[in-house]
Length: 237
Length: 280
Image (cartoon, rainbow over all chains, first blue to last red):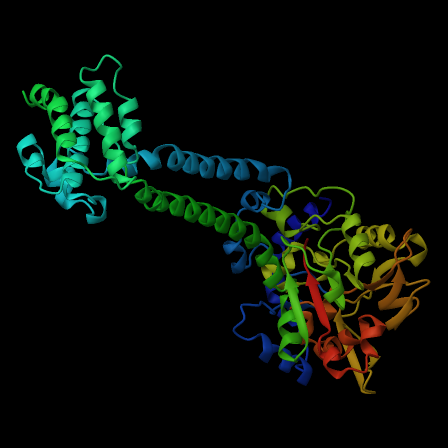
C-alpha cells in the first residue's frame, strides 16, 4: 500500500524510463541455461523476464502491453482454492448437479415407460422394440373367436387370460404397465368390478399353465371361456 | 405383459446420463480449481520448469497441484515454494490493477502445512521474493521485491528467530560458487540475490551470514528443513541464469534421504522421486 505514491511517480516518469533502455541488464547465455531452455521449449512455460539495473530507475509497469491482457483483479479474487469468496460457486454448482440428478431420478424412469407403445395402439407396437413383444397372442388376438380358434389349449388359455385382463384394466381407465405381473394388474382393479371372480380364476389357471407347466383339458378350457364370455361381450360394446 | 426382465435395460440410459452429468460436473470443477494455480506455476515466477528440466535430465520429478494424497515414503524431496509471506493469516485479494501488480501474497499457505510436510518427508521451503508484477509484466526490478521484513517474518515462523535476517544484495547479478558432488565447480547466478543469515544452518550454497541454501531445523518440532532464500535459483526464469539449471540437476538427488543415496541396489537409486508442491 505504501508503494502507491511511488508507483504514481513511476507512471509520471514513464517516458523517461523508456528512454533509459540502457538500464536493462542482459545476462549472458550459459550452456546450462541453454540446455534448460531447450528442455522447456514448447511446454508453455514462461521463462522471459527482463532484468533492470537495480540502481537505476524502475521501468514503467503500467505502460507495458502485456498488462492489458491481465485479467481484472476482481476476477483474480474469485478463487476456487477454498478462500472466503469461493463458496457461492461451489454451492451453485452443487445445486445444479443435484437438480439434474433429482430430475432424472424422479422423472427419468417414468419417461422410459411412457414412451413404450400402449396396448391399444397396434401401430406403435409395430414401431416398438421387438423384444417387448414376447407373446404373439398378447396383442394380435383381440376377440374370443380368434382365441378359441387356437388349437394349443395352453397358449389359448394364456391368451384368454391376458386379453381379458387387459380389457378389464383398460376399461377401468388404467394404463397397463409392462412391469406389472398379472396379479398386480388384478389387484389394481376395483373390488366391485363385475366378473372379478371369473377373471381371478382365469388368471390363476393361466399362471398354473404358464409357470407351473400344467396341461389344459378341453372341459377346463370350455369352463373358463364360458365364465369370461360375459366380460368380453360387455367390454366389446 | 409381466415381462419383468426388460425393466433394467430400460433404466440404464437414465443412470448412464446421471453418471455422465456427474463426471462432467466434477471435471469442470477440477478444471476451474486448477486453472488459477496453473497460471502461476507456468509463469516466470512459477516452478513448473524445474519439473520439466529434471525430467528431461532423466530424474523422477513430479509436480503436484494438490487435490489428492500421495505416499510420503515414495518422495525423496518435497519442494514447497512459498507465495505467501503471512503463514498464519488469510491474504487480502487485490482490488485494483495497481494492487494486483504490487501484490506480495499470491496463495495462502499455512504454517501447519509446511510443518506437516517437513515431518513426513525431506522438505525444502523456497522463500517468496517477487511480487505478482514480475510474472504479469515480465519485468524485474527491486521495486517489485517482496518486503524483506515480511519474508523474514515467514522464515522466523518456520525456523525460529535465531536464524537471522533476510536481505537483498543490491547488485544486478551475484555469483555464488558451488561444488557439485561430481567435483565440478559451478556458479549460481542470481539477480538482486535474496540471502538469509542462516545462523545454526549448514550451508549448501553461500555461507553463514550470506546464505542462499542451507539445512536448517523447524522451530519447535526439530525436523530437518532445507531453506532456499532465493527462488530464482530454481524458478522458471532463474534457471536460465549461470549454472543454476546444472546445479539444480546435480544437487537435487543429493538432498533426498541419505538411505536412498547409499542403497547398493542401482535400480533403487533411479527410483528417487522429487516432488514440487506449489500448493496443497
